[in-house]
Length: 169
Image (cartoon, rainbow, N blue to C red; front, top):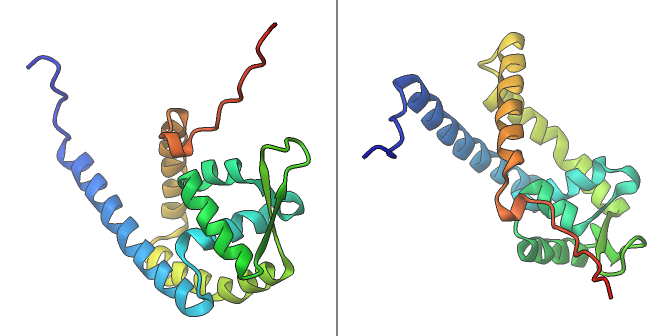
């Protein structure tokens, strides 16, 4: 068939399978550390860390879903669990009453401060230990290019939501 894509060369195939395996192993290790240190799931940690890094500790739910590549309904559930635990608050957005803004609380910041030392130690031990500074720089640059390419045509859960255009009457 003329439309059949060419096979991956051995280096491409090796890189792909290594990335998949490293991603799975790292996520498994991180999830265990987060559960043990703070009772958090991986996505809950992503949400708290994103909010902790945001100006004023707040982001719109849609922006959070787009950033962490998680379904909007799943994110709503996770934010609800974090809100019940007192780690975030949710409120109507000041910019758009149809949107919900999520804000990290002092308790959420305290939990991040509690889990971060173990999280950083785990990353250094499992992910960065076999790499030197040049390897880390090359990896960051390469993965950054791949991420940017993939973000240029993201899956629906990672795509910015289109705003409805006003109807002219």
